[in-house]
Image (cartoon, rainbow, N blue to C red):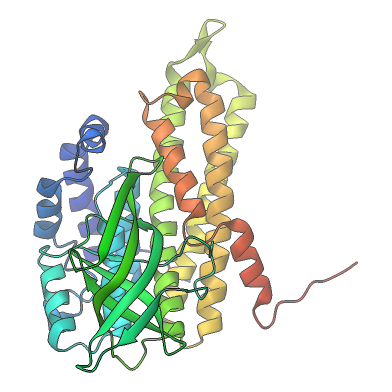
Length: 376
């Protein structure tokens, strides 16, 4: 299978990397992390100008109709630069509207605004008691006489929930799982924001009779929620590839400058072997992630689930191995906030536990039809 990016994809990646190298260096990123907002409107506007916000939006709503491979290209570059803007959450929200929405009316208007960078989105996947179970949903929706719904319940660790203009919220309506759009600032909605260990922002959302609009597309139930989560997982894996590349590069550079016994430690064969293992882990994670991007749009849901879970497992294993080795090779500096390596490792740790950790996806992979344990 050919995983070579086409000319347009490579040019897009090069343009994005040039911007990030020039304007989104490590110190600039740290200033944004320490700011009260935790994100940068200036960089978000630049992303919109570069076409990032329009990339995943269908052409009918003013976007470029970018597929999984196109998004993989972008997420790798964002991961390499440790970008903390709410791009992942918005892209996943766009996919939710694409899958579960009608493509007309208010759904189309939201997509058009998202394409222009005027609207940020977030999907509230999880609840406090549910861990990684997407379908353990206690939030309820109640219909009124005028056809509107109201939500009551809570969602936890909603990435960039406080920065989103609209949330996509799974809830139970008459016992069935459905997806709803809630505007930030709606009556009865409470947002509690906090910073995660990797410098990004997340929020707990509480709803108490909060007005909501149900997504009424043909595919707007449990199956849609699972596919949206798989899309988010794929983008996280792609981001992790960029983080792994940056961490490997930072580690090699550091070992070339750190002196021991009168020479750079990069010359020690034992350490060279460890860095080669780090590279192998990253390349294996890259291959399985590229395969998952190809399989995401498969007509077989089980094929999609199998590929996504396999990628999340391999990426999670690589994240832990490369991160731990990088910290050890950096020595005490590897756990300080003054060097990028520590922040890269923290980001990998959060990615590994978002939308299911290694154990969760191993169990999911093993539960799919066709899996068999060979004994002997």
